[in-house]
Amino acid sequence: MPIIIDDVLFNYGEMQMHFDTKLPANRITSIIGPSGSGKSTLLNIIAGFEKPLSGKVMIDGEDMSNLAPSERPVSMVFQDNNLFAHLDVAQNVGLGRSSRLKLTPSDHIAVSKAIERVGLNGKEHRKPEALSGGERQRVAIARALVRQKPVLLLDEAFASLGPALRHQMLDLIDALQQENAMSVLMVTHTPEDALRLKTWLIFIENGHISATGEAAELLSPSGPQALQHYMGNQR
Ligand code: ADP
Ligand code: MG
Image 1: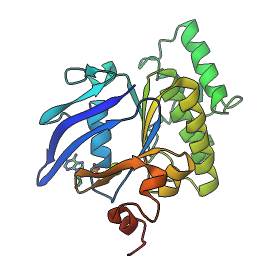
Image 2: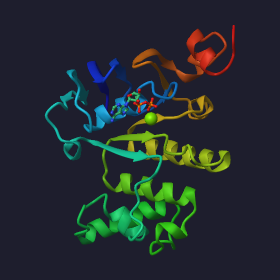
Image 3: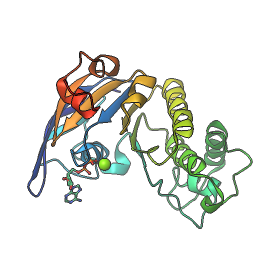
C-alpha cells in the first residue's frame, strides 16, 4: 500500500517537524538520521499515536486523520519489544489478535503459524525471561504478523542485537515483506541494513526529510553530502 505523508507539521516544544513524502508500496523503506531528528515521531504519526498539527497521512488512498491507532492498517514493533513478562510466547503473540486473549480456533491457528514462521515452534510456553534477545524480537514480530496489517513499522527493532542475529532478523523481515506484500518502514542506525535489503531510503535531519531515494544510490560515494557526513566520510 502506498503511504503518503502530505505536508505534515508537528511540534514538540521548540522542535518543529515537517514531513512530506510518498513511500513506495509493497517495499521496505529504511529511515536513518541522527538521534533526536524525528524518526520515531514520524512512525508515531503514521501509527496514529501522535496527531499532526496540520497535514495528513494517507494509506492506500485513505485519509488516516480520524482513525485511532487500532483502526489503521498498521502494526508496530519497538526496540524494547513490549512483551508481557507474565505471559508465555503463545499468549504474547495472541495479544496481536485480541487484547483480552479471547481467541477463537482460527486465532489459535494464526498464532501457531506465526510462531512457526519466526522459528519459535517448541517454545510456545516459555516466558520472555527464558528467551534470548533475538527470540524476544521474534515474538514481537509474530505478534505483529498475526494482526495481518499491510503496513509494518519497525522502530530500531534490532538495534540491541549483535550483527549476526540482526542480519537474520533483517532477512526474516525481507522474506515476510515479500510473502505478505507488506509496506515496511524500518528505522535503523546502520546504513548497511538498508544496503543489505536494497531498500528505499529516507534520511531525516532536524525534523525534516533531507534526502530520499534508492539506498544504494544515496549511500554511494556520489550520494548527498549530508549522508556522507552521517556515515563518517568527510569530503
Ligand atoms: P529519533 O527517533 O530520531 O531519535 P524522536 O522522534 O524520538 O527522534 O524525537 C525528536 C525530537 O522530539 C527530539 O528532540 C526529542 O527530544 C523530542 N521528543 C520526542 N518525544 C517527545 C515527547 N514525548 N515530548 C517532548 N519531546 C519529545
Ligand atoms: Mg527514535
